[in-house]
Image (tube, rainbow, N blue to C red; front, side, top):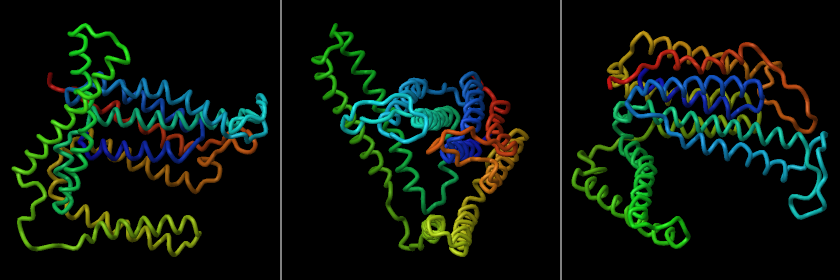
Length: 330
């Protein structure tokens, strides 16, 4: 699979788990994601493992989301316990709030795991070549910003090792002396990166010809119209918004067509593309099926969630990359 397909897979995962709190669909998505994570961590197609940080973040985020929502949302018909009339957290603690907080934490954890998989399989150079010429400065800037977190983590590890060599114990005093060192390393890295970009003429215009950002304008206009149509309920505005988004997508494909043709479209990539397209269609169909119950909520009455087989297939289809990932030549 190439980087474009992995990016589309991550976008479909994030959109699908963010738009539902149905425990059946979230369970299918998390099962599929676990299979992909194990396959990627074992194969390591680019030679790097999937980060373990989402494991720790998920172990903290899930109980934290459950606890906070249970203490702040005093809504629901299934009362578990009643707290005294304390400020903010006082009142009934309901099973409805506990369930909604747990499902929200599960959805956020799934998105974090998806980003972890994307970090292990995404070829940044291949993805940057797909960016149109008039958007490459913005894309490189975004890539540099995303690279700041690994640089910060590396600086932190170096400082911790230096403190260990000096026989410093883990205390507030050692932490007080390590923070300025990490900040200094970050400033040094930023200045060196800025000098390299300045020497290479980053962001300089080679020609005086300027083009109107028609694609960006259409994308912004289409997004604004779609959101306005969803809030107002005007079907004509919704159709116009989707037309603007489709035109912006067509312009982006036209600009990146040579780079798209240069991607490695193997049989596995074709299978993955077809599966993602099918899953997207089934998911869009599920938004219109009332029995799918994608917009499930345990408020105000706790009830059994609905389930539609096409939507369940769409969520479980996210596991397909686990069977198509290949190991690196190590």
